Image (cartoon, rainbow, N blue to C red; front, top):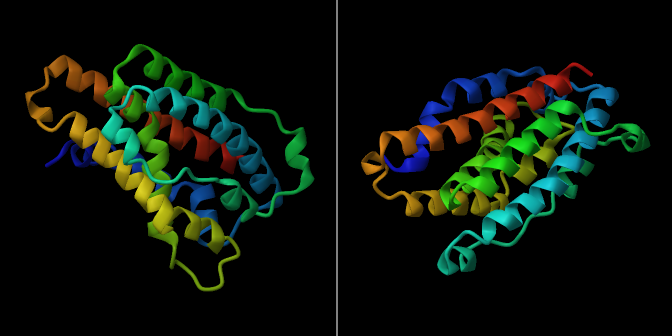
Length: 206
């Protein structure tokens, strides 16, 4: 078992909670309020802008080969547009849970190695792809189908696959890594997953 599959296995309980969270199911089954969609798009627009900066910081830690293999950068505006938000998003500031998540990632990127930096970002990248795959064909005529199609597109899948391959190439023999390093990598990764779940849960409350 390679490293990213091992990590994903550890994240299964959190990922299952994400699948069952009210907002994610609302996307999958076409059942979201305007207020929920506005809140999500406002939060995620801020998040993705900051994520882009954090990815740039991580990118500088990668090898030249890894950098050269990176697929085309994605523009998530398409996914945001798919949720049909209102102009009210301009009046919604970033929430504390959002800022805390971004701070966690920044800390792990700035203080850790390339693997730790990638693991701080990975739960966001891979969970959106996996959510899309799970709910893409859940119902017919879904209003939010473009959102699901974006995260299951060949371009997004390529970026997710590249992220997995980077991590696996950095730690090809992860079982030989010291227990303390394994625990640190896993903690970075699972903490980001907990923040992902919190992001969805807060959104459903609006």
